[in-house]
Image 1 (cartoon, one colour):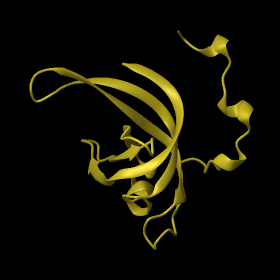
Image 2 (cartoon, one colour; image 1 turned 90 degrees about the vertical axis):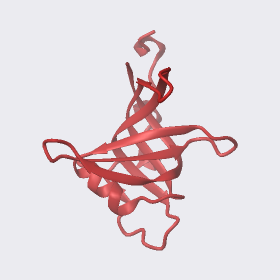
Image 3 (cartoon, helix red, strand yellow; image 1 turned 30 degrees about the vertical axis):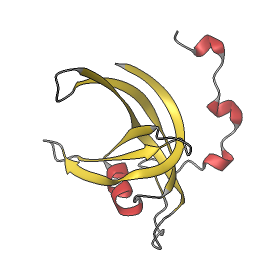
Image 4 (cartoon, one colour; image 1 turned 180 degrees about the horizontal axis):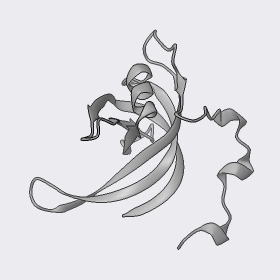
Length: 133
């Protein structure tokens, strides 16, 4: 499994689905399409307070920006072959535009809201010396 920090924007492709771990921690998963021209789907995972906020404020068709750890996980498919799935374990999100009329809770984060329009480019970009490969 590889892990990297990422900020992605896209359209919510599948509605969020909430479930609970054995320790009763909420986990919400949904899928976003990060490419308008073709289907490039990323599975998004939200835990704890983010899981509750996603469930209440995000729905299919919303435009969203998500930040978190990008990871590639190997899974075994129904036919027995190994498949790799790209997932983003989010730390923050912002709904840019809502497909529904109820967009009252458009920005949520368990610790603080990141307003992506105010992020300095130096905070987002990393130098070549910081790339692990």
